[in-house]
Length: 483
Ligand SMILES: [Ca+2]
Ligand SMILES: [Ca+2]
Image 1 (tube, helix red, strand yellow):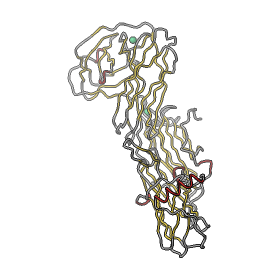
Image 2: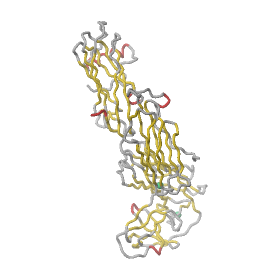
Image 3: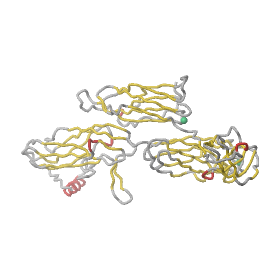
């Protein structure tokens, strides 16, 4: 039988107890107190619902315990509770009740989190954001008259889902209501194009893109929240936020916060963006028709050779609609109605076959971590190694064991600023250890890998996890500059 037995029994009032007993009877469990007739031997089989006790994050996973009375005395109110250093696997209840000689009973409890879906179906699954981890579960028995069987143990492994990772770029255009000069003045309504690319190895799930105003009065968001769920690896999405700069906005820049969050996997990026507010500005001349951008032409956010680079034409020339001209630049229309500026002398080429390669200014380092495939050890440390590379730079790389920093290496002064490698021993305490590896390009652009290693005793038995670490889900990204 499959049931979520938490709080079926426990500290309950008599009335609740009677109701619980009736519930158990419906499940075929006899919860009578009985009279003590002495001990009896019990065969206990503990297993999980999966082969090799391995599961994938996001999938159903259950613990199955089968008890057989191999002695000659009945046992009463037989039950068991799990004990694990992983909160989700801890304190699960299994209920058997009266067990007569020769009888077997089985109880399965979920190790996941249960919710009722839209069709009123109750679903219990492991959380999608679980990292690679190895755990131990003890099944501790109780019997009304003190004849409980011995504690049994089981070991499980969960494999994380491949994770998405978000690279992105931000482009503010005065294209909704404004003079169209590529700069933002008071009184204009602007688009903020957020281009998100999944550069990770797994898809995203429930994904939110949000824009927040951090400048107070004078900035009005008109579209600030989007859902961009289920982004496959390698795919990109464009979100078009919009906001207005009121005439009485007093500051010389608008401060906005952008965030992209996968709510299921708890993978997120966020960043503050400062958009300068221009005073004055030119009036572009209207243009129509198409222009052909030369192979290698640079498309920028404003009519200025130093303005942010949106992308570069490659593989041939590329024809695009022309909209306006200003200061030696032509404003063209890119995909998704996004405007861009190209120097006029790069906009009268011939040919075709090119495409626009978009630039991502926020691309986290590619981080590989190897732990030898082993998440269980009897040693007091584990060797991990790996490397990080980035198109811009890798600033530093560090490792935490629980809340303790155990490794740090700065890339400052190294010959190759865009790559780093590491090879280190991470100390382990008994039981469950959270190991997190970080590689940073900057304070905001960080990659992280988390996994959970179990250290067993030299004889292979499960070890107690020190209490201070048992709730820790890795550590937050550091903000301060390392020394
Ligand atoms: Ca403008
Ligand atoms: Ca980068």
